Length: 244
Image 1 (cartoon, rainbow, N blue to C red):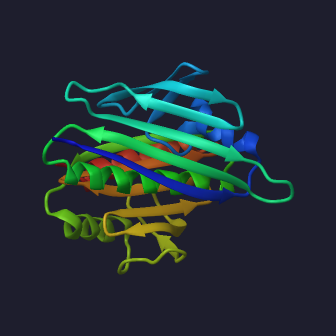
Image 2 (image 1 turned 135 degrees about the vertical axis):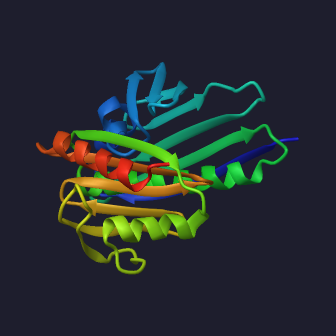
C-alpha cells in the first residue's frame, strides 16, 4: 500500500531573510549544509550530485526571501519527496523559518525508509542552522563518502571512538580535542548527537558521521583556505577507517 507522510517544523535563526534564502536557494548555499554538490536553476530545478547517485527536484514555488518549494522526480513506484520553506522576517528579531516536508514511500515495508528519512531531514535542518549561525556567507567545499559497515550502532560508535580518538559518547555542547590519524589534532564541539549520528563543528568545518542500515556515511563542509588539503586528508581517513 505504501505510506504518505508530512511533517512540519519551525526554526529561528539569527540571520536575515535574504541570508536564509541564499542558504536554501543557491548552489553555494546548499553546498554548505545539504547533501553533496548542488546546482540551482532559479525558479526551475535543483540538481543534487552525491557521487554515486543524483537527485533532481522541480521547483514548485519561488518567491525570493519568502517562499521556496520543490519536489523530487516521482519514482516508478510512486515514491517522491517534497520540501517547502516559508521565511518570515521580523523587525529586531530572528528570522522565523517554517518547514513542511512530505512524501510518499511506495513500498509495503515503508517504516524503515520513513524513519531514515525523518532522521536525515532533522540532521540536515540542524546543519542549516549551524551554518547560518557560524559560517553564513562563507563558501564551503562539500565532501561526501559512504561505505559498508555491518554491525549497527555499536559498530559505528566503536569505529568512531577508535579512529577519532573519542573517549566515550559525547553530549551536545561538549568541547572535544581529537587526534584522528591522517587529519591531525582537531578542536571541535559536538553539535549533534543521536544513536545513529555524530555532528562536529570546528572553526573551519561542519562534520557529520552517520549510518543508514549497514551503510556508513561521512559528510564534511569545509571552509577556509585549507579546505582542499583537509578534504584529501579526510578522504584518506575514511578509506582507512571503513575499508569495506
